[in-house]
Length: 287
Image 1 (cartoon, rainbow, N blue to C red):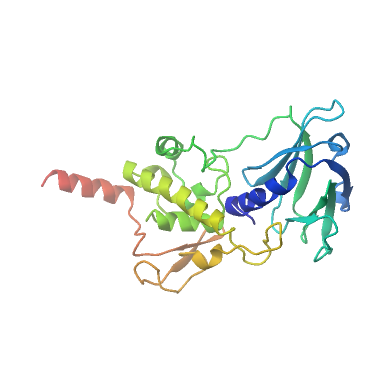
Image 2 (cartoon, helix red, strand yellow; image 1 turned 45 degrees about the vertical axis):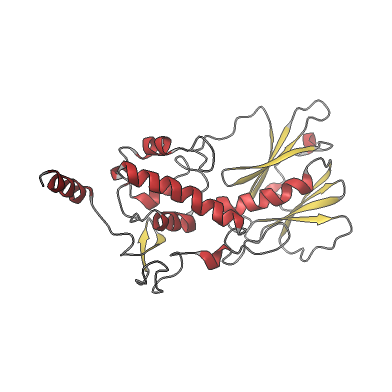
């Protein structure tokens, strides 16, 4: 499933292509999408394209007295948004679920497994409650520490909670824990202040680097021009079971947490229980 870096890559590519264009026609080809009422959006001009968690939001300026309209697209497992300039021929039309025609081009929503969603929402409607945006200024070590406090959940499943940090999925959770030198099975609420700072830095560093390389492609993800993400070659632990750690040359191990694969380096990310940390701290104080 596309995570924050993949969706952000799509948004950054779509924004300059769509901004200022007028939506002329919407063709919903999949019956699952036909409940969406798109009529108030027709004639609207694209004001901005942004990411909300793992969703693409296209905001259309007020038209025909209907107020501003937000087009929300969740790509889910296999969804893709493809931009075609005027007179450009699509590479494929299989699994085409929707076609949005703008001045000078069209936006195709392609989704083989049909899990993705497309909604037109009036601006006045409140967006669903979500967690903290990890790349925003609001995400500080202090704020992150507050979210982690007293949590008994293991760290990696905690990173996947969208009511804590939005946009992080299975791939980047393993990568973030490795970058922070924290074992994925550590209790989230047991992190010390310096560990929280490392985690905060790792979250932002891993996500920003992945965005710079266009995200990660395993099978389906492609950007608006049909190109695959290039971050797969940069992965430090994910999908590298048995291969040597890039940092210490120890074989990467894989295990399962909440029915999902987790990867880590047992040497770079030793599992230290809270009781062990307290005992170690007391021992140092008595020296």
